[in-house]
Length: 380
Image (cartoon, rainbow, N blue to C red; front, side, top):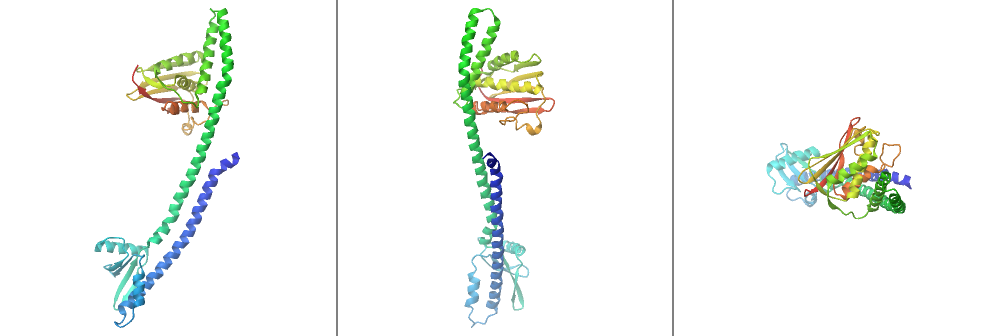
């Protein structure tokens, strides 16, 4: 089944292309046949014109007149040898001027060789263009190609949306089940720590353990919010980032230096636990890129409408071809990992906070800067 899904897109493209090519070849044969038929009609029209002009007054010219008046689709212009227009028929121009008719006669003569009409000692030429039916048949394969291309594109888009919907359902289900499974052992750990703190109130080790268990509870809360309606509250972005940096700094290696600076104090609508997750994942991504040693600088600035948060590291950087792939689920350069961290970050920022996140700059061997854009609300 999975192999069939992989082959479905190229198969649809091949089928669509085969339909277009077959239609084009068939229509081309019809157009060629129609062109030959219209040329024959014009030859007959020329012969009828010659007969009508040279006929005696008492001759029956009903047939010739019928041939001439019977042409209601093919545009015709009768000219002399200097392209001076003598008469015209079926021209799609209201009240054409002599210059317009002359230019049209020249254009017709470029499409089809003019048909000579001998009128006594004089010579005239029938210049004719393509009929409306000819033009429609000629355009038919192009229109059909566009229609089939649109149809195939819509099918592919529908398949992608269905696949994305399935992935979202799996992702949401996995997140909520994870939160549920974490709940019981976290509650148990919290109870045991409270017991240990009561017995050893001065032992700082249990205070640190309490922080980490509280962190686990926050992680479980984050997972439980995936797929649910996210509540956003007006929050001071500075406080959220400072608190998160302070927590992360003590959990990273001493070889990793972190800093946070801002040119002001900014407010935004945040779901604080989820946004803390964003900062944590970006910092962990930076540590992985630096291989556990280097600098992470978080800077914040803003304007009247947006808050701009830059997370910069001096790691190995991202190649040009991978800049647009880093947020794709499953993409990772690590030997161990699912490649979901940055994908989750993008989902939280763009879907839940209606912001933007992107690679602001990256150079191989120099480092990477990710930028987050959030809508700003009134200052603190």
